[in-house]
Image (tube, rainbow, N blue to C red; front, top):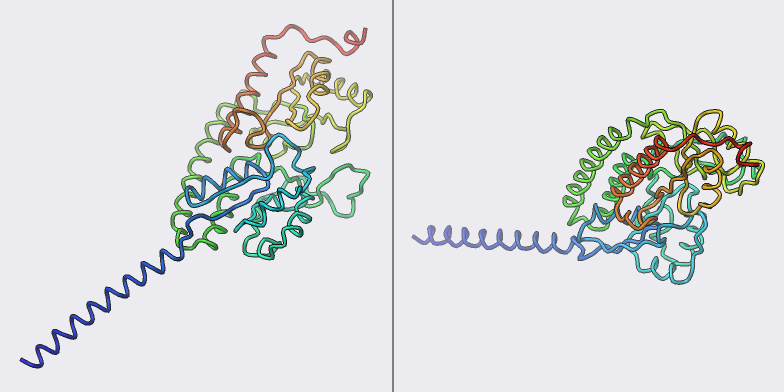
Length: 331
């Protein structure tokens, strides 16, 4: 009887110990899950992708509003203060944002510096376009990006790669919610693949259409949606066009029956419109960022807006009267 009593006591003791272990595991898991990960992103596009991956477990701020040129942001003290409070800093990487190094130095957060746990380079894993030969890069070429074109967010499938990079970073600082971040990035991938398939289908009537772009913002978008670039309004990236260059581009447009001029929100719409008018064409403002235009509040809406804007402009061109020649316009 005494041995049975000892055995029963040991059983109860082990059960109690097991309960304590389970409780400890629960406490550990809860302590590993942060209430909120504080994230600062350089632009609204990266901020939106972070929200989609992190859900209610992240608090995200964007340093940019959306319409402005991402290359020319001034790192004001108010931006420095936002970065100082961040657990993660999400940026475009490469040489896309030349103002970022000074911003991070001013913030004095070692974990947010390149190579730090909190520094999230969204360009990681992206197949870059327009990579120049290093030996050929000079200032005479204009604002050339030495690592390749930095506007990679404008291919919706690149959003999947960016989402995965963000999910990995969130899991590093908030391991307790890692499985949730993984589920949400998989949902993002399914949504972006479905959206891309639908938009490519809708853009099929424009497949192979040549367009003029203002700045060198659109190679990823053009490639994804099977458009071709005839020329750029800028004679060199970041250089304002003069009358002679505008006349030359208008002549090329006439000779090649091109009527669409794509312009981003930070470029000169008046110049784009004047060029389009010379050939009876249309200048189309597209969103290069989330929040660049009033009805573009999410990453998906960016592509939906841009595709519909191009299709609408092409429909207008198809129904427009015969376009005048540049000689007639000059009379």
